[in-house]
Image 1 (spheres, rainbow, N blue to C red):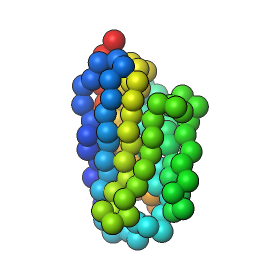
Image 2 (cartoon, one colour):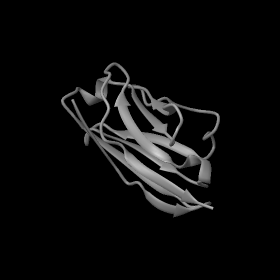
Image 3 (cartoon, helix red, strand yellow):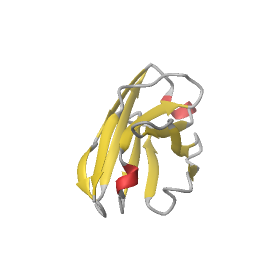
Image 4 (cartoon, rainbow, N blue to C red):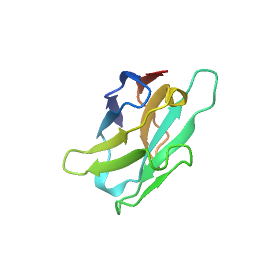
Length: 112
């Protein structure tokens, strides 16, 4: 299983970023996909999930600001992040729910 996350960067508070995660080695369409994040000195937390049936769920801290989506033809999951806050600063990872696999993640830094 390989996971290639991208799209992170430095953005001012209130700005937007779109993360992408391309997968290989799994039957993408058959997997629930998660986005996690880990801020410095904190535990990894679940941010958003999208099921095989395209049903999304969100952590309370990002609901209304973030949107998860998937493109099964591209084996890719996305995380659209709007109205970013400094507390969203973290390394963001995607992972298929049924596998304990983590890619390198992509760093998001939100300045105040």
